[in-house]
Picture 1 (tube, rainbow, N blue to C red):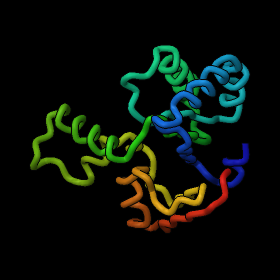
Picture 2: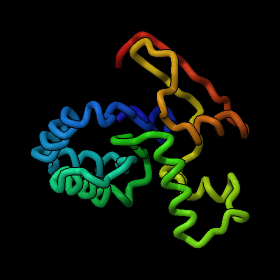
Picture 3: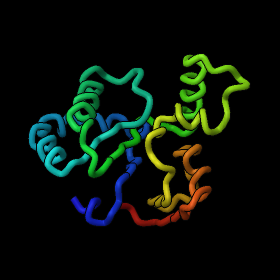
Picture 4: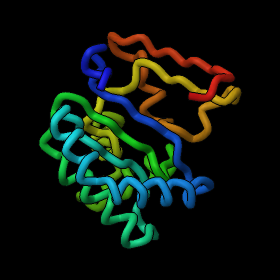
Length: 166
């Protein structure tokens, strides 16, 4: 794992959306077949896996694979690999509002700081760098809330659009 050597603590990969759901499910099922080996390596390297996005409607076996990976790596602290699957920035803002209301907050109690605590990446710093591959020059409903905060503190918020596909 090269992440920790580069002093990178968090990486979020967005490769999987609803339109790519079937392909991702196949990848997950393949990974599940090799999960013992993958899990041991993640544990050895100190990698925590988090999957961000809407889980309602996912197939039971897919949900179990995701939850097993998160449980198995929950105590790892060296590096955090996050995968945005079935994730959208608008969904994230809506679910944060719903969670805030469910927690009993009134409209006058909701502000940016409090709502940030209900976002799916509440425990993760806003990104310093966005890299959009594939030639598109747009953020495509990805990390809308977090992207707005990038660069607002003592960080450098940078967006790079490239035609390269990694």
